[in-house]
Amino acid sequence: MHFGIFIYDGVEPIDLGTYGVLSMARRVAPQIRISTVAAQAGTVRFANELEVIARYGIADAPAFDALIVTGGPGWEAQCSHAPTLDYLRRCVAGEMLVAAVCTGGMILAASGILDGRIATTKQEVIAGREVPPLERLRGEYPGVDARPALLADSGMVVTGGGVTLCIDVTLYLLERMLGAEVASETARIMEYGAARAANRTRLPTLTTA
Image 1 (tube, rainbow, N blue to C red):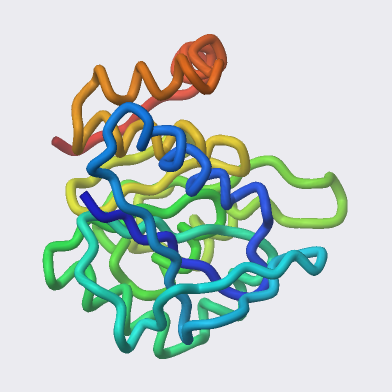
Image 2 (image 1 turned 90 degrees about the vertical axis):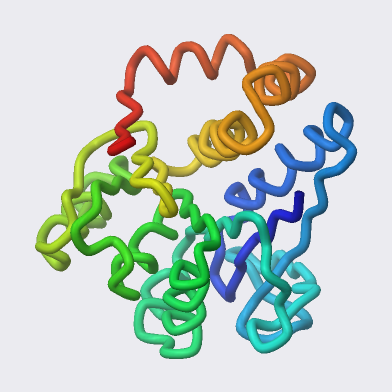
């Protein structure tokens, strides 16, 4: 089971929590593999100067079982980066499960693959400084059924809420792909079980299935 983590300049480091969840999950399900992918292989500079190495570029990335698109301040540049958008469209066309966490959902919207689907993204921002990305999703992409949620599952595309909800989205993908026991045991050894339950209570999980 091979998971790809799509990264780019300006990703918020906390969104790499997706990788951390999968890393912990390998203790429960050793068949999990994790790879980073970017527009080009090599060094990617996250927000606040963290440097991460992308193992693959989009030209040579393998067919993952699932691709997770991260979020962060660099999302706006990615929304106009044609190679990224074309890559995401090709992934979905090839029936690869594509998920986005936080503002990664805005990149999926820019690619067009959220049109006609339910979706969510980050809601909370610093008041007076930013427009909530969920509000922008509604306003800029009228073809998307944008709603506040923990996550939205429309089949081959999953979008998640903001920031630390990347953990919940990754656990959801583990449950969907490898079963509830793998997801719950991963949450337990991460000491995240209570937080996961609380998030499920306060925010809806939307699905078209």
